Length: 253
Image (cartoon, rainbow, N blue to C red):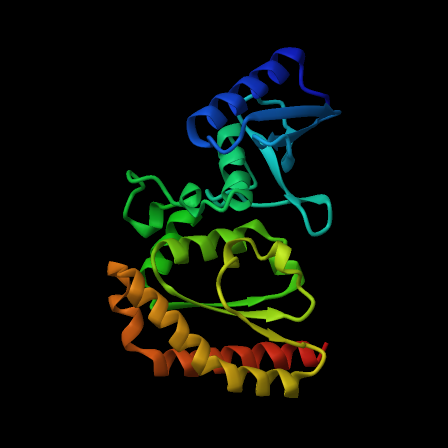
């Protein structure tokens, strides 16, 4: 595939910088570097620190680009889905997706207010957001691969934004630096290489973790927490079954 023409390169830079000024005041500048069909987008913080965000792939259109998120844990780029549920979209969508992750602002991933309410006509992001709103709690079983996936953090961020109970079970050796939307949330660390020990760890720490999270939600006075805090027992049972199934899966690999 051919490289983008000069006019498209100029247009892309203009759109990204305009969106950054409109939506992301945390950034002092946006740098776009081109290499073949790819555009590498880097944000700059006021102190001069560079923040790699994403890679866009030219597909013969100035308005629609393939999206790949920057993975800080691997120092590379991975093809990913945008909040719309599609692997390509506008430059503005790509910037919002990447900045929502690296600037810890999950509101950037929520569907617009005019999104249709009929689930059959809603984009993937709208369906996921709807299910999160209906849920009492979210169980996050985070492996190293999952920590590098932006859509995982999008869903976690949406749950936290809605004041839902978030229960993270994190694989041992996943670096805290890649937890993104789980930053500031207590989690249970498990060793997938030792399923029996992992189950014992979950059994010992699950109830205290849930109670701590519930108290935090209550103290924050989040209106949507009303349904969350009344069902700790089903949550505990559900988490236990989920973790058991996951550990059995990994132990057979």
